[in-house]
Length: 417
Ligand code: CTP
Image (cartoon, rainbow, N blue to C red):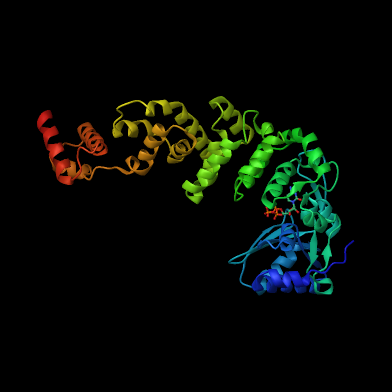
């Protein structure tokens, strides 16, 4: 075991308020006869000098008791999960997740592990990669001491992702996705035995539930630039396990880049998903949606994207009026239209999609139902019809002002009376 002390790194790289809180937590743990550790990604990122303010703390003792004591002495939101022995303390700009140190065993591949309380070493042994299996003691007696049973610090220096034991991917195949995510995020490499075992066990992905796979895929898609991890997933035949027709190629990389340039942040994830399934047939997409158990909203966006893809040739027909474009597109969600605007490589089609997104989508007559009634149109189907006529005229630029709209209503009334 290492006897490296990282107290100066902690003092130097963590924000002052976070540092103070962690020290107080360590002191409180000691008062309660417990030991407290910073673990996992927080240690990894501290050593890499990457900001990470959502920290995981592990308690040798009782995490809930410690979390409750800490919440009593500071203004913080506390959420506890007694079943899992975990608690979350949310402060304004960061959060602390506390968990009781645990020992895990896997009853069968892909199942959630069985858990009993354990020591910090037990807790590190159950983790995914050596770089995530380090802890720093926060209790005053051993403050700053690095606990690194798998030489994670060495692997960080050598830029390697290494599993802790041979059956790691068999026990938990979500680690396959995690390995690719860290490899690409950090610009590291899979250590050679890890790479070999990942490829050998790629079919273990079949042992994981759709929800867990989807969660891992979404974590990859939430990275700053997810395309290298998707490309790597294709290369290592990971993507094929989700659906044999999925591809992580240069086309996808290019379209992902465009998504980031063009979309609002809140739309990016759904648009990535639409791009990912774009090469699939509708039937293949249904298989993918079913396997990953996508919730209604994102499933609908992906279905719409493919339905519209099938209709795109209609947008390339000559002499289309803006109202024809509107008619073709208005039943699709704007996400589906945007996904197609990014995915389609036809300039003509793109121009029509952009016209709809930037302009036609927003066009509305100035006169509302009440104003039209005021001009003498009786309520009922006639009113609906004239509203539609006005909308089409407005879309095609035949009426612009309120006065022109009123004239159109009057002449329609004259022609229909
Ligand atoms: N962990 C694990 N196996 C998993 C999930 C998590 O071993 N399947 C451990 C790792 O030690 C990881 C820690 O739990 O560091 C916290 O998990 P998570 O929040 O997913 O990862 P972070 O390391 O915090 O990474 P990120 O920066 O992506 O949030």
